Image (cartoon, rainbow, N blue to C red; front, side, top):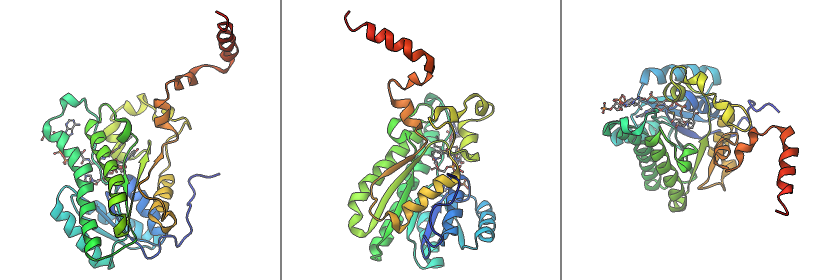
Length: 293
Ligand code: HXC
Ligand code: NAP
């Protein structure tokens, strides 16, 4: 089985318009490319319009799809409202909001200034809130239904994680928002789901989470029971399914795609993975010998 293959049929997203925040790099770009191949129009947004224009040119010629690039800092509600209007003006409607934009870096929490902590909360939690609120209000006001919001979180949204505390705090908030609105706004014809990716190498994340020789020191693949990191197409396959009509009955769910990484860290006796096979006869004998003690 080739897990880098494309999963859905060619017209799976035909006629849909999808907004991908942070769509000009990393996982956002990979998902955008696949959505275009499946027939969607995609609006890519971030702070850097030159980067977005270059990606628009690249992906349009690669896929034959249509991309609108819009400069928009998700921290600013006015810019988000302008982005909603620009998207609707270009494509007539928007069907899917994919909250993918994020900011993050490793740091002992006591080294963070108040502004450093706020910056991450503002991009991740306030940014997701701004986009969700702006599109939600628009869809409700115009009585548009069959809409999907997909949020990218991480597994430490529920486990927490040292050294990325603002990101963990913000992603936990995004997950709570996902589950809350899945119930409250279902009556308006919206579905809310989240994806929690494990390690999927991207420049943006690796430069900030594994700077310098940390990349060599900490081989993230070793933390994963499946012993490898994720392929971007695997994530794009899952995202395409969750924004498509094929997932119409999936609502309020967070789907983890991490090769079993977080569970390996969680299970109390999982460290027994380190015990060599040939030791198990001896261990079993020792345990059985205790029966009549
Ligand atoms: C301590 C830092 C810092 C660092 C910035 N700051 N970097 N503090 N250690 N390494 C402080 C600054 O001094 C400032 O505080 C405040 O943070 C804001 O910094 P700016 O540079 O002014 O912010 P801005 O230009 O808005 O840039 C935001 C950013 C930057 C988050 C700092 O890295 C960025 O643009 N990131 C976007 C892309 C990204 O982060 N991608 C990774 C996503 S990975 P003061 O007090 O001095 O004003 C991800 C993976 C999840 O989320 C899970 C993986 C397993
Ligand atoms: P990335 O390439 O750095 O993506 C982050 C994107 O967010 C960039 O395109 C950036 O564009 C945009 N962005 C940052 N601040 C913004 C702002 N204020 N307004 C608008 N856009 C902003 O990193 P990535 O690895 O692909 O991450 C994508 C998503 O996956 C994030 O939600 C991340 O938390 C999540 N994730 C990644 C991994 C992984 O292993 N890679 C694991 C778990 C979760 P500009 O700089 O141009 O604004």
